[in-house]
Length: 225
Ligand code: TYD
Image (cartoon, rainbow, N blue to C red; front, side, top):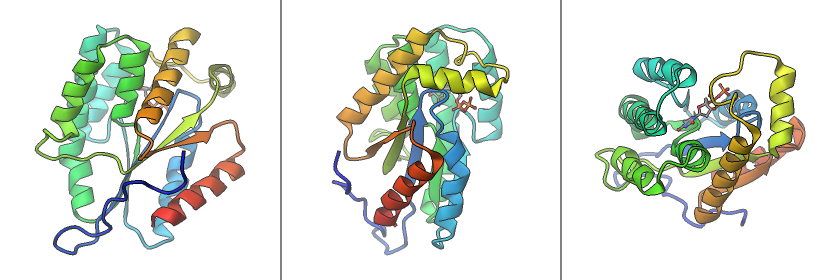
């Protein structure tokens, strides 16, 4: 994948106002993405950017209630998909679109690529249904379209991710409890999606040290800011 963006969105909108960028972080459970979210926010703030840090599922009071349900309750994969996108619709309306409109950078720990990877790749939900929901909630057909400008995919082999989760020794949520093959399917669905959207995806080797990953992030974001 190239180091520069094929399709830079303009830094300012039609009225000349400075436009924030929408950055999403993705990866299988245990890939290490969440460890970098706060650091990324501090890095951007040190460059005089206003930053909104958020996550999915969640990010709004309603979304956090849906998250608690999604991480704990057994349900049909399509129910799960609809709830993920319902939480996302609220998130776009209440947090993401308003923050971008006022020029913030939005750093979101997971977004729709996670639905394609987990519900599509992991659970076999028909991708055409996912595309309909994506288009409805934040694609071209949405009342508040917002596509990520940049998606950082933290990629690690599933065995490495599983070892990290086991070492953390905490309670496992419903997704983390899935079998190894499930996480393999999720991983390959992410890589497939990265291959289909090379203009916005950057795939990072999640096995590198924190320092090495942060050096790469500095490089990517220095290009972008
Ligand atoms: P995450 O917050 O990354 O987990 P953790 O707090 O353990 O780091 O995400 C919670 C889980 O939700 C994760 O296992 C992936 C899953 N998920 C989906 O299955 N589909 C989605 O669309 C999203 C956003 C998350």
